Amino acid sequence: MPRPQYVAAIDQGTTSSRCIVFDEAGNIISVAQREHRQIFPKPGWVEHDAAEIWQAVQGVLAEAVSGAGIEDGQIAALGITNQRETTVLWERATGRPVCPAIVWQDTRTDQLTRALAEHEGLFKEKAGLPLTTYFSGPKIRWLLDAHGLRERAERGEVLFGTMDSWLLWNLTGRHVTDVTNASRTMLMNIHTLAWDDELLDALGVPRAMLPEIRPSAEVYGRTVAGVPVASALGDQQAALFGQTCFAPGETKSTYGSGSFLLMNTGHEPVVSKHGLLTTVGYQIGAGPATYALEGAIAVTGSLVQWLRDNLGLISSAAEIETLAKTVDDNGGCYFVPAFSGLFAPHWRSDARGVIAGLTGFVTKGHIARAVLEATAWQTREVVDAMNADSGLDLTTLRADGGMTANNLLMQTLADVLAVPVIRPMVAETTALGAAYAAGLATGYWPDLDSLRANWHKAAEWRPAIDEAAREHEYRNWKKAVARTLDWVEQ
Image 1 (cartoon, helix red, strand yellow):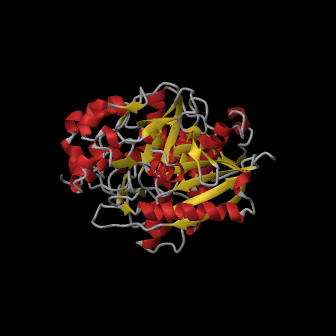
Image 2: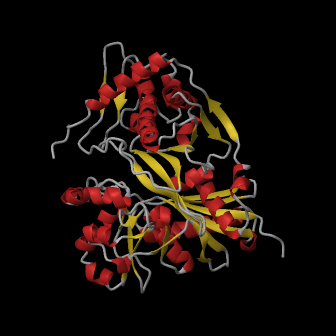
Image 3: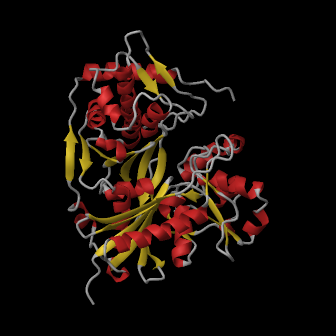
């Protein structure tokens, strides 16, 4: 029987589900994508229909395989990468969701997380996470209380999972999750890689409803067509893996609606003292876990969309670069997009957005440039925190995501970070990371070195401003950030 030629990856994202088929060199063979609904029942609430997402995943999986003109027998493995923290509850007996899924962006647990303030040190020490609405644990607690599901959950009749668990349940029949997704729940001890009774008690989550925690790369089961399902990674960890950031200090940043920087910190977790998250980067089979520091930025690409949709200054996202190039600098204007507070390294839910430094000289070109610079300066804040926490100075940033098509932004990043910024040949690093992990688990790729050999540089930007100019602009940015704070009265 001939050796299978391809690896497929499901990329289950916040707005759509995709399936991408890769060959041995990491080249894309076919892509299929379907969007799903974004449900907003109340201000601050964001929900998904998990059953709708599963239907979409089945569709894209079939389309990607048939679109490539290949058969299931030619697929060596299937990997999964997913939107993290989004919380699904379903019945063990029927496999049907018992309530809408609460999306990671949802803020309905704000009152609950504030009530848990006495446990903040516990969550930081054991889970590596701050006490915020972002993570899955408070969402589980809210759903159990709001829908009267606690007793059923305690009996193991109602199950919890993030999107990887939901897909693995439907694909293989197993109730499992991987260490990267489990590390986003506030329920897993990042030192033991196991559910922690003290964390479960603090959040009031029954152990009986939780999936088994497994490595990121191993064969969890097989699809009905017999394809091994062999990896699961949260989307940002998958991008770290797809960018082949396998050594301590290697860092990637994914630029989409929001942006996420992850730095590989090796086999020991680094507990942040500067506003970052400690997370599991990946675990391959029975090997030790690799940890990462993460800086999450809430608003980057979505600020460009806001400029387009709310202000009408541009008619397409690509026009932001053209408009920004009509001026030589920001004209003294700084835009801090704290639309729903600030994430890393500040974690200030009371902050709101500001445009600072306005004078009669400022034009829409200056505002466009300030919008792009906002992404760069927020990245700089996170990188400074990473350097301080890890003791490993960033030397190169590997960038991926939709915003990397903007060359002016990439140059601005290099200027404000004072390090080279590199864009890889294969931009779909999230799906590629899931494919790599699945291929490793099944022997399609032999080792990490073979994955490194697949990574190729498409473009590189080097710093082009002097230190004095860089630090002057950074001081102004920090003054603008200070003006966003204490806006919302709790």
